[in-house]
Length: 419
Image (cartoon, rainbow, N blue to C red; front, side, top):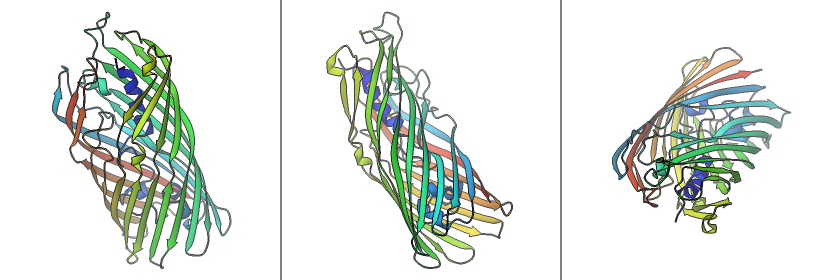
C-alpha cells in the first residue's frame, strides 16, 4: 500500500522552496518598489537605491551617502478553477490564496572611495495556499504556508570609474507548514477523513555576486548571479484518523536545492527625461528532476524513503521597461515582462498551479525632500490556462484534474532615507 501522507511530504519540499507572486516557478520578485515599476527590466544594470543589494551588489558603488530603504508588497490573487474532473463530491472554488504581504529592508553606506557596504533583509521565496475544507483535490494538497527569510551582508568594489563588482553571502531561514485531507471517512472507524500535518525548517548559506559596467556615459550593463542553496529540512509529520496503522508522529528529512539564476540587463539613458531598460533572467529549474523524503519510524520499511519525479525544465524571463523624469521631484515608470513556467500539465500540482505569466507594471517615484524618496508600483499579472492532472494514488487519494486560470494585482511601496 502507498502512504499518501509520505507523498505529501515530498510535495512540501516544493512548497518550502517558495511560491510565486510576481515571478514564476517558485521565485519571488518582491524586493524593491523602484525596480517593480519597470517590471525589474533594469534590475542588474540600475542602482536606484539600497535595494541594489539584491538586484546587483555591484550597484552599491553608484550610491551616494548612507541609505536606508524599506517597504512591502501586497498581492491579491484571483484563481478560477474550471473543467473539474473528480470522483470526490465537494467544491473547487479557487479562493485559496489569502492576501499576501512581503516585507523587505536594505541599508547601504560608503567605506571609502573604492569600497561600499550593504545589508539586505528580504523574502526571496514564499508560498501560501488555503483551499476550502470541501476541496475536491484536498488529498493532493489543501493548506501550504512557507516563509523564507534572507539576510545578506554585501561589499562592492569599484575597479575603475566604469567597472564595479559586488559580493554578498546569504543566510537563508526556511519555515513551513503543510496539511492535506485524505478521503478515508468510509474506511475509518471514526468516520472522519485522514488529516495530515507537516512542518519543517532549515538554515542554509548561499551567495549573490554581481558585475556592473558603464559602457558609455549613457549606457550601463550589469549581470547578477544568485547561487543555488542546499537545504536539509528537518521536521515532523503527524497523521490523524488513518484507517491503517500509521497514526502518530514521524521525523521527516528532505534534501532540497533551490536553483541558481543569472539576471542580466542593460540601461540606456536617452536624454535628461527618458531612460530605457531591458532584462533577461535564466533559472536552472532542471535541478528539480526529482525529490526524496526520508521518514523515520514508519511501520513498513518499504515506505521509509519515497522518490517523486518532477521533470522541471530551465526557464527564461524577458522584460522591458522605461522611466520618464517629469521634474526633479517626480518620475514615472512602466514595464512588461514574460515569465515561463518550469512545469507542464503532466506534472503541475494543486499547491503551485502556475502557468506562463505576463506582467504589466506602472510605477512612480516622489522625492518628498532632499533626504526622503517614496516609490510605488502596481502590477497586473495574468497567466495562461494551467492544467492540473493528478492521477489516483489509491482509494484515499483519488484522481483530480482541472484547469486553473490565475491572475493577480500587486502593489509595492517603499521609502528611502538618505543621510
